[in-house]
Image (cartoon, rainbow, N blue to C red; front, side, top):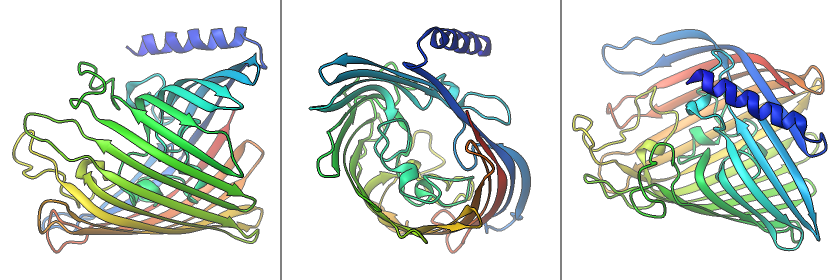
Length: 382
């Protein structure tokens, strides 16, 4: 299997090199460093776990990619993007996909906007050309490390790519841009035997609006995940509204974000598994037990501050949730993060960061599991 992946990559690279440099670009980045964690599950009989490791994709996910375009004339252009993700500590391909992040084809029109097809970043991600949330809306993007708070450790839901996605992006109008998105089967690789557009597959829709005017940027996303139905579970579709605004005062760039969510499945809360702090199914002892849905809200406040030739980063987040259909499942999360990024060149950065997370568990009542994390490393872009 690995040999086939290597041969495929070599073939794609060979095709790229035969194309005109003006049409096809090969690019990527590698992020690798040291990571230290302290994890306290706050349960009887469990000791605090300390671990150190070499870790990749800490500040930003490792990636390699190919992108290109052709001008068709009359204001039309066709473009493509193929982007994979890998572990720089072990060389593995993320999720076993050659192009885990993006595999898309787009038709761009100066008049009618851009229509994109394929595996693409959902609007609330920072992936590819379709993710509008991610790195532009938080000092630590959607995440850093395992416990350094970015959006996806405070806000539930998907912050990644999905299969079978159609996205339309309008032309900019007075700084504003409309984004519409739909996926007919979010995981075609894992659910390849089900029919698209039907309820045996996870599907989603999203509407986004972005606005930029000098130092001010605003991003909003309304999205819903229509969970697949099984013989043991018929979950309601989730609904979430996310809003972020940031303003660059030159001496500091301030980020503020919030989310209201309803009927989000516990399995879509990221970063809680290690702490065992959030119950995801009604009965963990029953195979294929029905999932638990949650209602709640999340808030974040962050800043980037120019300092000594680099950038100091800080972020604080709060999440509060309760069972949508079950009583006694209240939970919350407090998270803090600070970091510093220093450019060694135009393509290489040194970084260091530290984070703290504390949960109010609804798995083990009256417990408050917590974790500390410190990391440092280098990012090199090519």
